[in-house]
Image (cartoon, rainbow, N blue to C red):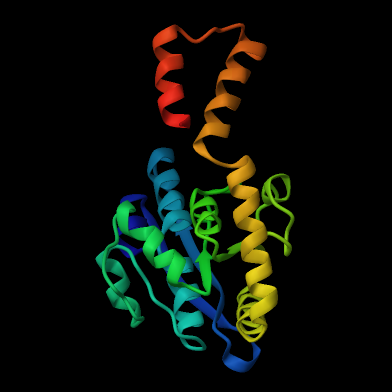
Length: 219
């Protein structure tokens, strides 16, 4: 953060982590900055904070303090003192998702609109997906029926504990999410939607070669 703020000619005067009652983990981080610099440098500084690993790292660290967690990803996870199992490429991820009782997803702060693909990957593996709330989720799933959402660290900890204690309910939601994803959220459905929008909204008709490629994707 000091390096990013220096580039933007900003002074990072303090970073204030505030912990929740009961020491359940990081609730928020307050960055106090002063000064001014070129607009593009300031924009880059704000972008770096928004997309930094800090929020996700504190979230997973918080969960790992309470439950048995396996973390897959790049080597930056080693600094968080969690059960880091290395990198898993796409051919391996379904194996890990399928073994889990709960698949935890965190949509980054800069993703204010939309849903990332982990939601669909986890549900497609018949694993209960628990993800931070985004309004668009309501257009795709029945919340707390086909997947589970959380809005705070405390709520996440409470819901993980609840669904680990209630196997039948957890498995029922996982099955419902699996069925919804296969019925409405595969590549086949997305390609058909894109082609329909191009034709109906823009009057564009996909050439035969594109249709053949789309058919290969959707089969």
